[in-house]
Amino acid sequence: LDIAYEVSEAKELLQTRTYDSIFLDHDLMPEHYGAAETDDERTGYAIASFLATHPELQRAATIMVHSFNADGAMRMVEELRGAGRPAEYIPFHFLEERLKNYWPR
Image 1 (cartoon, helix red, strand yellow):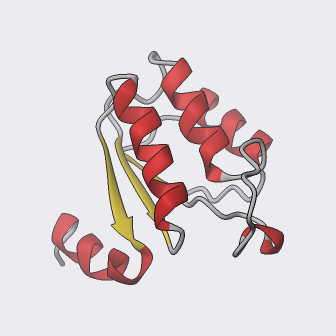
Image 2 (image 1 turned 90 degrees about the horizontal axis):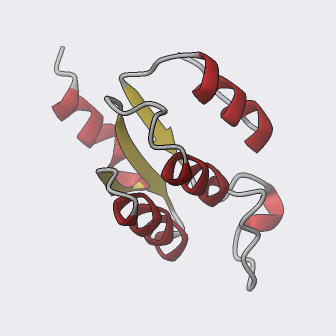
C-alpha cells in the first residue's frame, strides 16, 4: 500500500511500481474543497490525465475514483475512459462498502 499526497510523488510511484488497484481522489488540498475554479495540476485530475496519456502504465490495475466532489470525480473518470482505460466513480461515502465487495474477508 502506497499513499501519495503530492501529484509528483504519485507519478513517481505509478512509473516505478505495479499496482492491482489505484484509488484516486479529486480534492487533495484543503483549498480545493468547495473551490469555484479548477486546479487541474494539483488535484487528482492531474493523475487521471497522466494515466490517460501514458497507456503503458498500470494497464492491469483497477482504477477507482472516490471523492465528495462528484463533478471533479466524473471529469477524471471521463478523462480515463476517453483514453480507453476502465475507471469507476465511487462516491466517497460508499467507498468502504464497495471495498468490502471487491475484497471480501
